[in-house]
Length: 67
Picture (cartoon, rainbow, N blue to C red):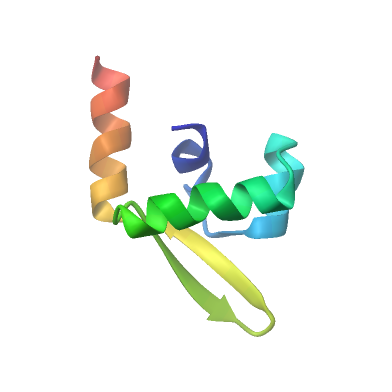
């Protein structure tokens, strides 16, 4: 949930690591699970991969805030 909450704007894997103090390999693993679940999408912007929350990710995050 913490990673989903950070995705109000597209972030790179490195930016995630800096903001969460989670190691880059761990961030990559978390993002892979979120992508596989349809909660995050990734797109290449030059040499950087930007990660964005999907509509499903938004709905899950909203539901978590309501409960």
